[in-house]
Image 1 (cartoon, one colour):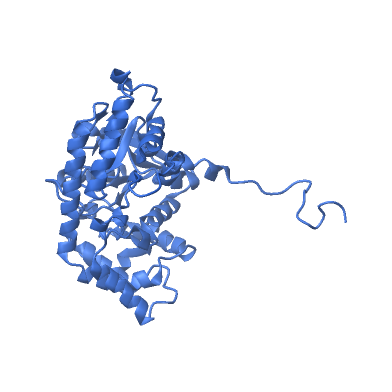
Image 2: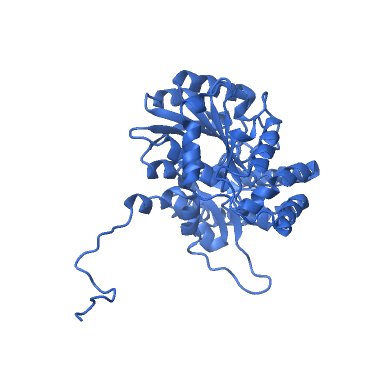
Length: 428
């Protein structure tokens, strides 16, 4: 036998190559960018050693003060013990779970949703993946907020759809620049995305601003994708208003999950909901496309689906109130401590979600090239991880999460201040 023949050895030429589109998407992934930031960390060992402070992502579940409701745990444990939800579920999700979510969301709407308006997904991430696949067609474009969650761009680009960015206005509470939105839209624009409460900005939109968005998109002939994964996580003067309230003005696809309000991102249960009393999505075959995609994709775990009715019905308001109180405490800590860091400017105090955007003044710092360099060196020197603004489309800004234990947050922000002082030009 010749060398390599029949043994997996060298061949004259292989017929496959990597997908170049995938290889270019790491920069559009929060996980990918955080992985690069954390690459230089060497964590201290031993008793009393400094630990990494995770201010870069929105997963507070590791901190005891943010543990999920005991009723949620009991619901999942009961379903597992019953042995009744070990089988495959239907591709759109179990009907009792969908009905329960429809009733839960209808509390905030002027009309009643039905189970047929709800499609279950493996977290909100898969909901985004599905919608970007459903909308993709040659020449299509989608309007996305800047700064924003760039997973939308990653999925759009992967599906061959153009992503166009409209600006959010930091001096107006990160409202949508409606003039910018209208200037970007054309006959190939299919939808626009809003995230409310806001990731990464911590903004909460008023009823009046959402009404303007609805009227603007109706005139443009595009529908709204409302990412409401942080629904009801508000702690300022503005209360959460779902975009679905305006479903009779413009059709709305609402994306959500139990991940943030119940603090269980690892349970991977999300949804796509059609807020569309006028039946536009049915006529335009958007609903059929969603169902077709679900036919060829994976489902959320059946036992979590089975637990949803009891999880929603039994969770006490005290649990949600406690979460909000902790976030109110941590956002106050964050707001006050950021004021004391000279090279960082925070345009407004967050009123919702788990994040704040702050602007870096690189002119105050010695030998820091940009936001990515800042974050990598901060992680290496202080074991504090924050997300560089480039990961949300806002170069030389930072996204900081305050959804961690209060003492850890104080420690992390103190280390951030020490880092800035050490690299300040005035200290040289």
